[in-house]
Length: 262
Ligand SMILES: NS(=O)(=O)c1ccc(C(=O)O)c(S(=O)(=O)NCCc2ccccc2)c1
Ligand SMILES: [Zn+2]
Image (cartoon, rainbow, N blue to C red):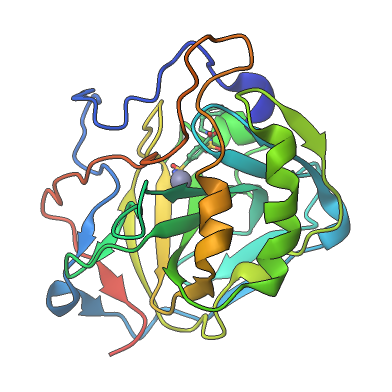
């Protein structure tokens, strides 16, 4: 659907890399300093409409594992919030740490979370392909949801059960009928939003970030299965656990983070 056929597999995850991006004044992730965020009362509630039947596959792309959706029509849409247009879900994925003490990409007043979910959407009003939208301002909208360790997340379990089949980089399994809405927190009215970038190559500055204030809970054991994935493909002799797949935080460069709540 969106990223599978174009992932530059020879591009190594430069998570901590000093990779300088042309311009580079709206890079992600960042720390969200709550007291510096500005309430914008024009921000609307998020409107999501996802069709679980359009789920296509789950695969390990060597950075994270992605659950991909059919984005050839407006069947999984995000609008409202800070967005002027309708955006289509192409995939969701996670970032996590080697322990429960860190793993998220964004932080809130420097608070780290053990993991973070990203739902990647592209502007189907202005562009006809994800690959175009990735390069353009207002091309992408990514919803970020923090994960905390607590009670088991029933909806996540179907996904966790599929992970052993995609342990190695480039492994893919068919995955159908999964409703991404089950991974959103109960409260989708309270969020922070700012203009940023992809946190993986090509790091393009095309993302309207929407970071939910309310986290979701997953169990310790569910998170442990994330860590059983591997960065490496089956052929490689040294297998590396897929952990700490987050990018280092980037300078704010004068940007304002807006909040939909006070
Ligand atoms: N943390 S994040 O939301 O910024 C993000 C992380 C990973 C990926 C990915 O494709 O692996 C993506 S992606 O699905 O947007 N693909 C980016 C790489 C890509 C660029 C151009 C065409 C295809 C894929 C986004
Ligand atoms: Zn991500």
